[in-house]
Image 1 (spheres, rainbow, N blue to C red):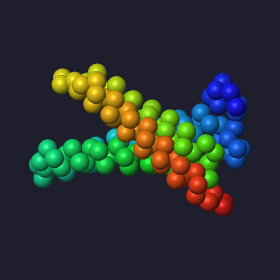
Image 2 (cartoon, rainbow, N blue to C red; image 1 turned 135 degrees about the vertical axis):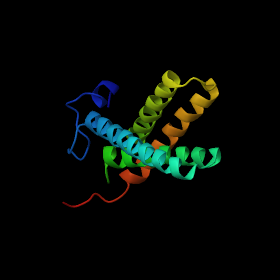
Image 3 (cartoon, helix red, strand yellow; image 1 turned 45 degrees about the vertical axis):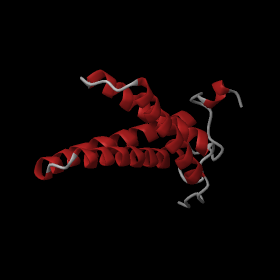
Length: 141
């Protein structure tokens, strides 16, 4: 399969259910939506409890991983084709969006190594999630 076929809107996954690009966009939308909802809820909790910086940092990392997993679950689907590569793309796109927004909005930019670590985490977490999700039995509807 050529890369131009992979990203063509007419190319369908092996299951024939959804075009691959639609699955990637769908996964990214779900991951971002989960992130936004969780950030708002956590901000409300932070006002009341005033957690330490360590708790905020741990929450941030866990939220990223959860958002990638949900995005991959929705974008690849149980038994979906090319799960590892599609999951890796969803994870990478999610983290690239987050890193880009952080770089634009932050007054304290991180080092390039920190940005690359975040991108690598998204790529790896997405790939592993996609591998697991694509090897689950397809749901019967």
